[in-house]
Amino acid sequence: MNSVTQNSPTYEAVIGLEVHVQVKTKSKIFTRVEQGYGHPENTLTDPVVLALPGALPVMNKAALDAIIKAGLMLHCDIADVCKWDRKNYFYPDSPKNYQISQYDQPMCLGGYVEIELPGASRKEMGDHKKIPLTRIHLEEDVGKLNHHVHDSLVDYNRAGTPLMEIVSEPALASAEEAYAYLTALRTMMVYADISDCDMEKGQLRCDANISIRPVGQTELGVKVELKNLNSISYVRDGISHEIRRQLGVVKKGGTIVQETRDYDGISGASQSLRTKEDAHDYRYFPDPDLMPVRVDKVWKDRLSAECPERPFDKQRRFMAEYNLPYTLTSVLVPDRLLSEWFEAAVTVAGAAQAQGVGNWVVNDLLRELGAAGQTLATCQVTPTALAELVGLIAAGTITQQVAREVFTEMFATGESPAAVVERKGLKGGTNHDELEQWCRDAIAGNAKAREQFLGGKESAINAFKGPVMKASRGQANPRLVDETLRRLLAE
Image (cartoon, rainbow, N blue to C red; front, side, top):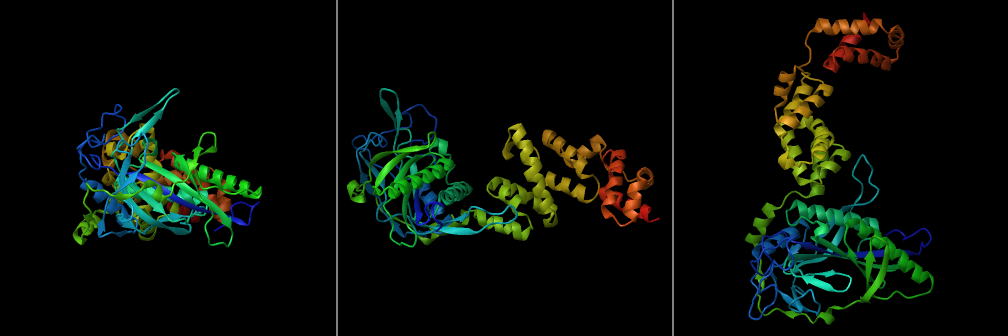
């Protein structure tokens, strides 16, 4: 690991993250009541959620499918048997005064999250690192306290939502690595349709355990847990702040206290909330109302077949199979729908046109979608239509400049590129006599450039191309223009 700061080269940071991911299911984890966001307070409840006497939990199989799929995506060992435990604590957001969770027999063990280390070049993928995981377990979410000036009110709409806790080993060395870890993890969960991971809606939440230690020491330092990191940027900023705080304490001869601190992303400050609880403080014991779950090979194989290609695996494949530059893949791959749209277009256009297709998707399609406030789901341009447009350019039927005008029409109307070209009369001229005359006029009008080219200055030929393209209103085939100019200059 690198030293924490240039001023304190003898210390290094050790960071572990606990990430809570809300699972995207129609109903809550132990009841049929709907889960959702933005509903009036306390409307997504029932006797199970409110822990009324006699109400018993019933397991949601879709939530189990999701955590198994998450484990498979993250290279975990899926337990043959997992069980449910009660984590006991008293707080207004938990109507039961306990939380149903998993303690000593979680669903997933081990695994890792692949991250791209900070500092990757713009031309190629940088160094990658595998951040090992301790476990992934499934539990129920709690309610939400809304704090006001004179009181605090609890909303139980979120209570009972299926929640995965993904716990990393203390293997992150910097705030930037933590940022890369969360970005990669979020992409993976969205790719597999496990969660939307919208941090503003609380669908992804992160607590960071941070400690410092002398470089070369293997024993971990005293850790501090940082909470309320409600954006990926705040996670990075909060960790940086906490590392600096701990270094300041040590430099002054103080001692780091194991505690939980609250980080304010707006002010950039933190304050102590409480000393850290240990596992025995929660008095875990097996839940008597829920049976253990056995996961057989058939179940795992079915979900494995549903898992998509992992993002970094896809990026490596795009670069190797289609010879795409890193700059294109880094835009295409993080969005699963966009990468699939691109590959559908390449299937029609052919692998040889992959870079051309990628350029159109990244530069033109995304620009038009953003300007129109649309998504791929509402876009009128199909992958097949874009492939046909790239084909028209490759065949010399239209120029790149004309193709941009055609694409704009395609986006607005949903017409095929051939139909737009025909309707607007944009097909490139095939009158070779006319092209030759334009080229002769351009050469005659620039004797200096002609002398420079004949004298060996290759770039001088470009001085003739502008006038030719202007005369053709941008419709002349650039390859034919170049060939014709060279032939006439050689005469």
